[in-house]
Image (cartoon, rainbow, N blue to C red; front, side):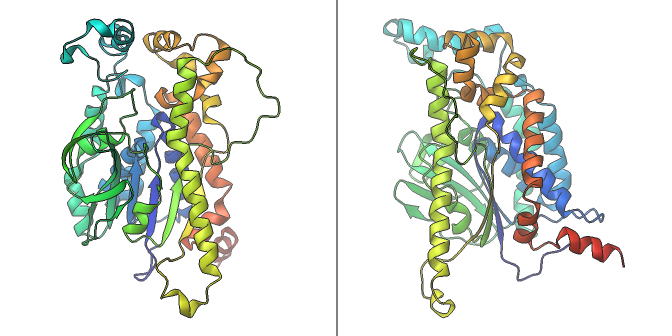
Length: 407
């Protein structure tokens, strides 16, 4: 099922969210099942791939294996299906004493800690993630993927702690003019594992990474911070239709029976609320903005559109139909004892506070029982949008496929 040469370029945007990114893999798995025609088609349906935070990791693995897209996706499925915390961050007691409890000591005894080297850099030590990335994200193949036409561009976003800008680092097949907007800019460069470590450095949780940026060396953290326009990079890189896979519900409904709790919120609860604001809110706003632009462009006569600076973008958004924090709470016991103890210190000690801190847990729960349930939810949500997916990719309808098969 090859795309015509003049087909509009399709972009894929994978947002951030720590362990929540397992959901994205489930969605892609079902999309490939919908495409399946029994021919073992390995064509990459996404010439332009953009990722943020843990979504950037998924994006990079897919981009570096774009010539064997479904085979590469199957490797991602296996990784997420078998995930364990120790593959992402250290959870042994001595490591937790050096990192997580170091933060507690800093809060209590900070006035005594004068030497910079004694100051902890993050709540958790994510050095195991370095090894995982080296195994599964082969950036040495990226130039080959671009040169051979299996991929047009890969973009990874990160946020500069030094300058405050949100930066999109990208590597492209053709020359693309870097863009500069208010507090966000782009830089063409040779992408590496360091860009992934920076983009996925959840604030406070994982350490920042030093990168060569638009203004020289700077420290970078999670790309979801200060990300006001998550869809923008794909558009700048030439995408005319875009699939966005979120890692949180786009619009959270009000609870029919709000939980009455007059206790002061725990640190874990506050952290989860802050992370949800960082990872989820900007995407919903950007989607609404693009939908308004599409509506406005639809009101302009076709012959006049070519003079407009804006252009309509075919957009498909797939996001969780269930609250991922509630799923995380069901699997919270899977966390290593040391991590659970750390969460207790942060105020996540009872069933009531665990529910409040479920959002925080949902980003750190790299355990197979949780990630497999997220992948299953992703498959289910994509299946419920099968007709929209077929229309988006211009694939034959299910009824049409059955008719073709009967002749």
